[in-house]
Image 1 (cartoon, helix red, strand yellow):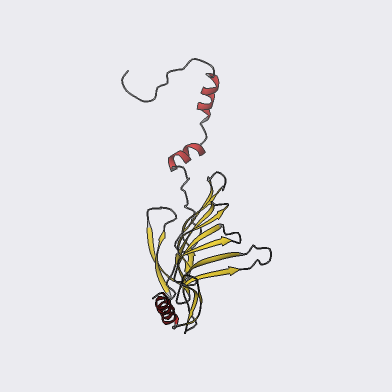
Image 2 (spheres, rainbow, N blue to C red; image 1 turned 90 degrees about the vertical axis):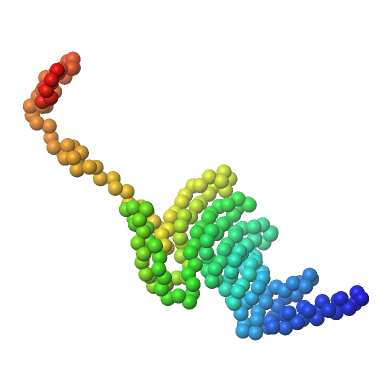
Length: 220
């Protein structure tokens, strides 16, 4: 009976994976790094990246769908410590990405993936003068992943946010223009010099007790 179960298990593994051109078979029967008959990466993958030009090597693992990264991908250093967590859609970064140092978040990025089958996209662009106003624009797609939303940079020791960047739907850093101009009336008051009579009056009464001045009002 024990041998029959083993034979059935091997047969099932062979049948399930017959559709793949190549794969790695794990001890528990799961498959890894599958390539189908169309040379497309499918399912769970683990990829090793060697050190290059002073940049440290790392491992990453996640899932492929028709040769495109999809869902959650995790990045580990060569000691097995988690260095980052990325989200993918259509093979491009999409949503919140996190990168860590010694287990603490160092940076958070937000990305927007675009369907690679689309040539144009309709997006809402925020008004630089009024953050509550948006304008719809049709744009030609030149990149299928754009920074979008707020990026945060942290002090890994304290967890305090030390820098933020905001990106609009075009992937451009967004800096609202604040209206710092003074009202027209205030501007005119500042620019107009005091009449000589007023200056002489202020000079002659400097240091004296307050003097009641007629201001045109009626009554007591």
